[in-house]
Length: 131
Image (tube, rainbow, N blue to C red; front, top):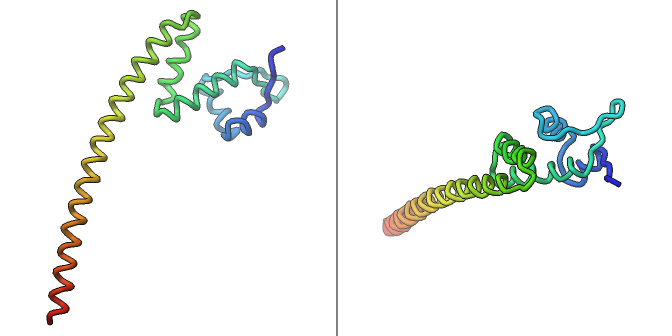
């Protein structure tokens, strides 16, 4: 039997807000069952939420995540989905490598600036002490 989750179950499980879940529903990422005013989530919804959150943590936009998840619906063998996720992952890795290079350059520049300022400070302290 397919487990059923309430919005509270999933917000607690994933440490997200009910508003986040409702937003994911609003943009079509998940489609919980409705019984009256209550949303009931199935295991497939739980898995989708887990994939969405993993994608967000890895820096993908909700649109990119939706596209990757939707590929599963068009190819149950998952081959197309896997190829697309690998390709998008490679792009993300390249972006991260560029960011690392940029941050390393900024760090190196700050360290160099700090060193020059430290030398200037020491010179000024020596000069002030000589007076």
